[in-house]
Image 1: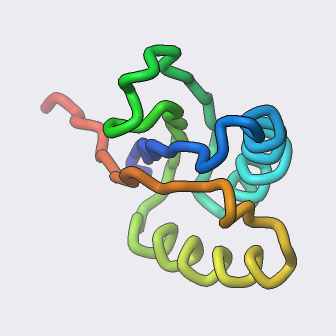
Image 2: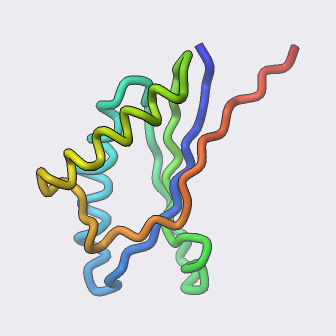
Length: 108
């Protein structure tokens, strides 16, 4: 089984609603993603530097274990529209800066 991380950098569109954004992200969004097969864990970070906007004020690192990362990516692509229809995405607050998968390098 291969080990991967997904690094997601985001901003909140409304600084007056950052508490609401963080509550949703930690208590709704992260648990939703962890329901997708392959996702193992997640940890969130914040860069308190106000100049961090361009690189993303918030970063989440998801640990993934899978034999096929494309299946994980496909499951995400299916889940996101469903979550949006269900009102589980805070699309009015979420600004995606970047989302990148990295595969763990295993020494031979």
